[in-house]
Amino acid sequence: MKIMPVFFKNMDIVVPGDLVAEGNYRIIEGAYRVGQKIFSRVVGVIYVREKSIKIVPLEGNYYIPKVGDHVIGKIVDYNPVSWQVDIRAPYLAKLDASDFLGRPLDPAKEDITRFLNVGDLIFAKVASADRASIPTLIAKGSNLGKITGGKIIAISPQKVPRVVGRNQSMIKLLQELTKATIRVGDNGLIWIRAKNKQVENIVVRAIKKIERESHVPKLTDRIRDFITEELKKIEGEEK
Image: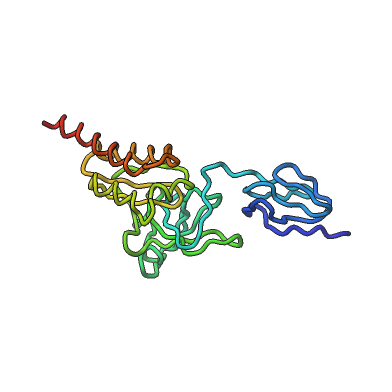
């Protein structure tokens, strides 16, 4: 029997131009053939079923983890020594208890849900990320850990660099003008905590404005003017 090699595992992420297989596979979607070689046409998740190949395109807001990225994630499951975390990637990430507590967890004596439970939010750093294994996180260290209070908003991960700005200029502007605490995840989730809901809403609207108008010249000046005017309105209401 002739072997038809596949170069990725089921549910691996592939990008355009990746050689995914060789042989007489039937292409269902997301790939193209050059001779006996089959290449990915899209960024997506590959599925191989018997003699067919399907690559499901990822949505525009997908996030591909990279080592060193900061992410905001939601706890969705756990076992005695680790949590599974939704970070808006095609796969769930893993957070070991030792990488949250800064020490080993003894599951015979300690219940992991005392520290984090399903539904909790964390600000974490990507410790490992490759196609051979699920991403792993660290949530122990400066500014890392459980998130409480405030507000979470979602933007396209591709627009995160514009929200942060060159040398963090844009995010510093937002924080200086509003005195809000802001944590930006490279996965497009942003946590905002301000002195009141009105100021939090101004920050949300400013970030959404940056996302919409990321291509507009002098955006920093536009955002400064926008926030200044909105804060004046609040001050006027309080008098």
